[in-house]
Image (cartoon, rainbow, N blue to C red; front, side, top):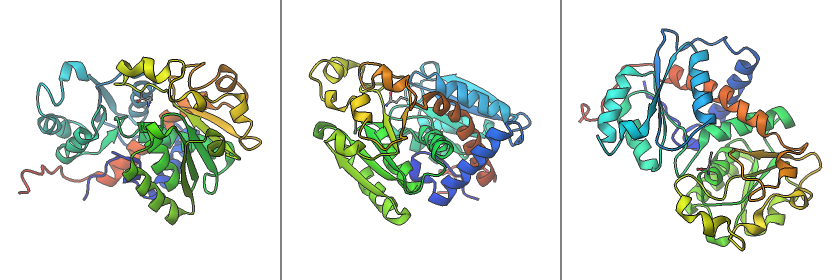
Length: 322
Ligand code: NVA
């Protein structure tokens, strides 16, 4: 049996993403109806970067599934520094039903997945944040009924993890995905190409533009993210100072005015009011950010349950297979 992971949004097929979201809606309605981690089985949850929502929602999700959430401080563990990623994977895997990791390089997460022998979940890397997108899609389904055929406009830093995950995850959900970002911060070309292929198959489309108004025009969902991602603190002044690259991409009432009537606003948080979004938008009637934050719990619960169900079988070490 293959071990399934969520390292990037497109590790799930469109049908599988829908299955996970359906399960999330069911678990939201009946929070303790799935006890797949009863034992309790341990889920190892590692953080190499700051966290609030991700820690709370994964701990809550594992506990509600009957498991034990073992939170590991990456600074103590030193994964990839004090000992190799492969060695850590071979320690955690046999003791865990799944490994959840927030780190910097995607390549390290991929190495963890090669050696752990259990599902590995991306809890944010520099490249992707797929758990957030599942929560966002759940929120869109709740607000607008379905995702297929809807238009989402992500405005801001087009080169960050959220931009990449919106492109892939929302294309999988059959959406028209637009990214409004300056030419200096375009999404990775390979990710755009993958999103275009997915969109063509799912009836959606992809548009990357440096015009925020074209991006938002008629959109059903408008989303943004911080202009300074974790790990970029040294660039904070040039990224968010006056005259910085993203000034034209701030989500304010004027920009929201170009979206569809009834459009909703999303933000993965933490938010910096007065920078990427005005308070009148994030604290206004179109904002669904608190529902979106709560949906991290339901989406991740469903994801863990689905991954563990798909992957139960003997653990295999890639080096033993050689
Ligand atoms: N792009 C942001 C997302 C935070 C949830 C970051 O990586 O810091």
